[in-house]
Length: 235
Image 1 (spheres, one colour):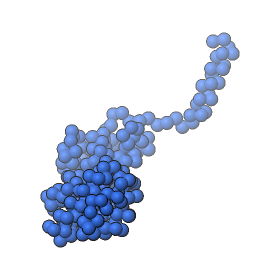
Image 2 (cartoon, rainbow, N blue to C red):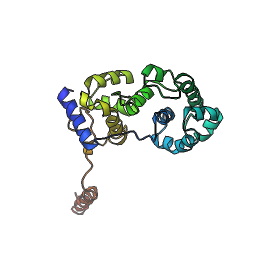
Image 3 (cartoon, rainbow, N blue to C red):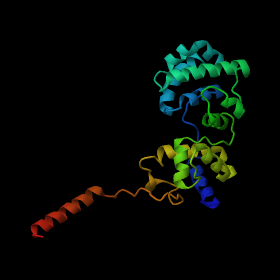
Image 4 (cartoon, helix red, strand yellow):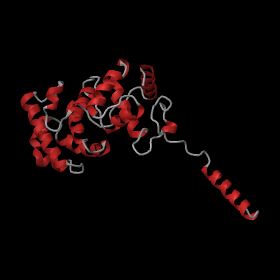
């Protein structure tokens, strides 16, 4: 895919959604960090259902640390892997309190040193909380990048590096959200919505889904009428 086509893809995504944002609900960098840690192998919706009670009881790292693993676990048990996540959250809160004065660090290395935080989570926090032009490659972005031809790669890191090199600078800040939302609601895994996709003509996917018949009921009736006519005529 050439540079002009990439630029047009992001120009269209920007026109459709000028100010994209994460679907996770949070009020500050700490709450965002917690929500992203909880979102691993879970939906944003399930996280948003669980976090209000947790954030009310533990609005700060110190308060979360005081809750302890049992207290955190009890409030997030509707989320998958909640026991492991509770342990990671408490361990993370301890590091934030003891090493960062209760603040979420802005440096990648410091973020990735936190329990339960990998490169993808660090990228989300850097992008959403601190405005860094990072791209957190999850399953949606990995699929969209490879399927459309924006950035082919065998691993999330390879796709991330190629996207950072290929996405025009004016669009880099919000590229993460445009791509994840596009993958979540349009370029879906099982049946992408190609007929209504605003970048379909720019996409290089070779197996685009066809448009559904405009009048399926009428077409079925017409076929039935032809069968009846052939039967009556003896053919």
